[in-house]
Length: 147
Image (cartoon, rainbow, N blue to C red; front, top):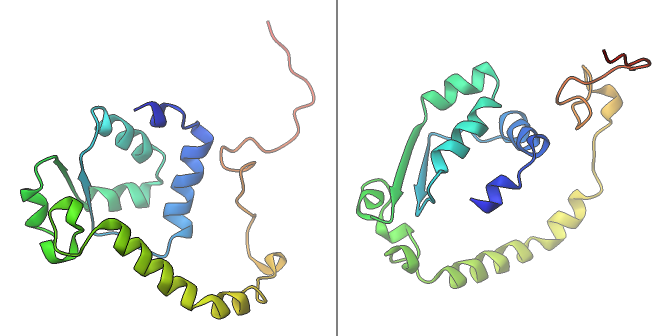
């Protein structure tokens, strides 16, 4: 919970913007394991930052909180796909990390080549979305009167 309390509203908004506008994924469900108390409070906080389209999309997404009882997780995800630390047959997490590290490094030349390409942001329609425009505090504020 201490980690969640350090999230600023700006960070939450940026993470939400990335998930709704920057991520190419459309999740069909979430499975949370070993969640701390207060998890639902934090989840609902994130949900409030979503736009209407994504808020309704989240309402249709299956969300399962399994706690420490992994039997309900096995009903959705086969044991063969889970690491040994979660009672699965896919081997230890460190072995999975090492295998994926090796695989990603095997594409090193591809990633170096991709660095040569980019976008011309001047041709993108609409205004850019950045930290300054996320909360709608644009403009000039020349005079502030306090009673």
